[in-house]
Amino acid sequence: MKYLNKDYVVQEILDIIRLQQESGIPIPELSSDRIGQIADSILFEWNEIGDPDANLEQFITWNLEQNLSHA
Image (cartoon, rainbow, N blue to C red; front, side, top):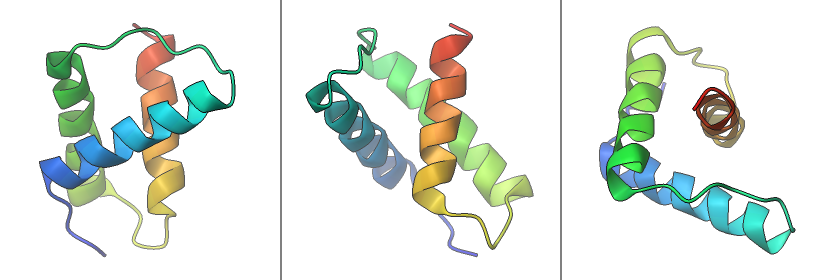
């Protein structure tokens, strides 16, 4: 299983947000603190209880969507 660091996860979140916005999907504006909190949540789940066979990009996308829908 790949061990992730926060900078990598934050960049992936920013890339996913950019791609979704380019596709016309509305994304609420997120502060850098909020993105950091989402990244921390993703890191915990991936590094502590993650599935080694999971698709990382899908995992980050799903987690981001969950955080946005429960905000």
